[in-house]
Image (cartoon, rainbow, N blue to C red; front, side, top):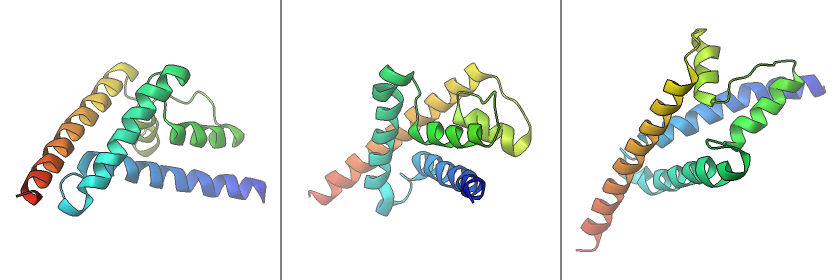
Amino acid sequence: MHVFLLHCADIFFPIFHTTFALFNVFGWIWPKTRKLNLFTLVLTAASWFILGMFFGIGYCPLTDWHYRILIKLGHDNLPYSYIQFVTERLTDFHPSPQPTEIVTVAVLCIAFACSLYCNYRDWKASSR
């Protein structure tokens, strides 16, 4: 039963984590999700940079928890980056760590700027 639950968690984490990441990137597009998107982006940045001071820059609890499950299932040599991991798992392509991290941080920064701009624009429109 224990192994069954680990396999269930191994199915859950990529679905949830990938959905969360995609929401971070695109959630600012829809007016109804903009505030939540800004919150999840702040949460992600806090994890990467504040928790990252203690666990390594780019630290993500979701990746950590999922990797602990994968290790119990016998996987090893897992990449530090979740984006690298999911790319390898879905496509069997093994991207280089540094460019992957640069693109990941750049996308987060662009999404954060878009979210800030849209939330500010919405706030200004509602205060008229």
